[in-house]
Length: 217
Ligand SMILES: Cc1cc2nc3c(=O)[nH]c(=O)nc-3n(C[C@H](O)[C@H](O)[C@H](O)COP(=O)(O)O)c2cc1C
Image 1 (tube, helix red, strand yellow):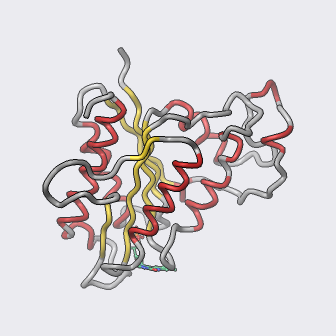
Image 2 (cartoon, protein in one colour):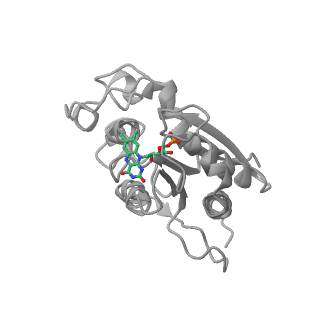
């Protein structure tokens, strides 16, 4: 049996900074489980236009019905097949003004054609798959939980199955991987490397998604 793919999507504009680091932790923990392969992509490497609300993805089957978004030919063309191929999805975002970054939101909005309304072969492309979230903030209580919930909401709309950090006693039943720069400043690029709780929770997220993808408890 071929290994199941867990796709990680990092929404940080800073290469190799905190969000990328926590996402790499989650991917590494997932890859330790037999039967799992991982791929981590960074949205900053792709040009992604914001959805223009044309609703063509829900009304007009195009090009043999194999293109989920008709309006733009951009980086999403490379990401759509990865979404279709994966069994689990982990989205990680820096916290900007208490919420997701614009890059993550643009990516999310461009998956309207993967919903129940989609008219291409991508209809229901994420349905039933496993999802989890990671958020990295400059403050300790800077909106990480809200940001993870925004990621969860995205998964719910896609009728995905959401997991948190799981049953371990420590650090507890967290919504997702929440990292902080505190007490360092937000501009610090590697503060997450000394955030033990953020690292542990992110690794647990990777493991939980892997277990759920494989149908394990
Ligand atoms: C425009 C902007 C808004 C931000 N808003 C918040 C915020 O609301 N809460 C918070 O905890 N940190 C906030 N931060 C700090 C970032 O979350 C922090 O720098 C984080 O490490 C960014 O992720 P990165 O290291 O992967 O780039 C903000 C940073 C920027 C640039």
